[in-house]
Image (cartoon, rainbow, N blue to C red):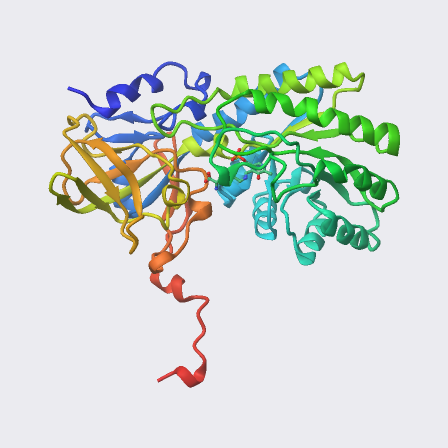
Length: 458
Ligand code: LLP
C-alpha cells in the first residue's frame, strides 16, 4: 500500500537541524500522529483548523529558525570575511516572521515603505534593513533615510533623487548600487532578473558614469548588489556572481576612489515543491557563493568584502503549509475528477501565475491508501484557479482537511481579496503550542476601505 507519508516520514526522523529545510517537502517537524493525522510543531493540524478556521496557513517555527541558522552558520564557517544574511521579506512580510528572523541575527531586505514599517515594528535594527525596488517614490525614499535604512539604488532617477534628498541630511545616506550582472539562469522567465534585458538595476554600460557621479555626490556608497533570479537549482550562476562583481569593485576603487566594502549577491536558492525538485542544500549554496567570491577577490588582490545574501523562498517557503477544507467534487467521465477547496488563487496565486506545482495530503487520514488521481480546484470564478493538477489522494469526503505544502513564500505576501474572499489566518506552531500571527479577515474588513458617496446612498 502506498501512502504519501511513507515517502515523507523518512525526512523527519533523526536530527532535524541537519536537514536543509528547502530540500524537504514538509516542514521539519511534520509527523503522522497516533490519530493518523498530520501534526506540525507538535500540533494536530485538524485541531488547528477547528480552532482557527479554514483555510489556514500553519508556520513551523523550528523549520524557520533552522533555515536562518543554516544560512548564518554556513557563512560564518565557510567565509573568511565578515558576512550578513538578510531575509528577503517580499517572500512573507509580517511581524512574526520578521521578528523570528531578526532574533536569529538576520537583517531584512525590504521593497516598500510597508515592508520597512513591518521590519522596524518587528524590532529589526534599521542598520540591518536594506531597501530595494525599481521605482521607489520620493516619499518612500525620505522614509527610508529618516529611518536610517540602507538604500539599494536601482537607476539614475533614484540616484539623482537621493542625492538631492541627501542635501537635507546631517550625515551622508548609506547606499548600495544594484547592477545587472548579465548572468542567465534556468527558472520561470517572470522570476529571472540577472540577464541584461531586465527592468532591475544599472546596465553595465552605465557603470562608469554612475561611479563618476557618486564620486562627486553627497552619498556614501558602501558596495554593490546583484540578484539573478528565483527558484534556481543550479549552483554555477550564483558561483559566477563574484567573478562578475569583482571587476566593478576594482574599477570603483582604482579609477574613482570609491572604497566599497559590501557585496550583496542576492537570493534565489530554490525549494522542493514536488518530489522531482532537487535543490542544493543551504550549506552547499553558501559554499558555492563563497568559493566564487573568495577566488575572485583574492585573484584580484582585493580584500574580501563583507558578504551579504538575501534569501526569501529558501528561508520561509518550506516552513509553512496551507490547510483547506474539502467541499464538493465533480467527475467529468474519462477526463478528470475535480475536488474543490475553500480557497484558491486568492491565497496562493502561484499556480495560476507561474504554473507552479504543489503536493498535498489529506491531513485527517494520513495513512489511507492513495486510490484516486484528482485535480484540486480553488473556489474562484476562473477556470484557471487550479491549485494542483493530477495528484494522487486517498478517497476524500466533504469536510476532509487538505494540506498543501511549501506555501510559506509568495503566498500570503501575494494573496488578494479576489471575489471578495477574506484573507486566511496564519498560526505559528512550536512545541505543541500554537499562536495566531495573522488574524483572519472578516467580511467587515473587506468593506473597510470602501466609501459610498452620499448621493449613492438609498
Ligand atoms: N533579492 C532581490 C533583489 C529579489 O528581487 C528577490 C526576489 C530576492 C532577493 C529573494 O529571492 P528568493 O530567495 O526568494 O528566490 N513571486 C515569485 C518570486 C519573485 C521573486 C522576486 N524577487 C514566485 O512566487 O515565485
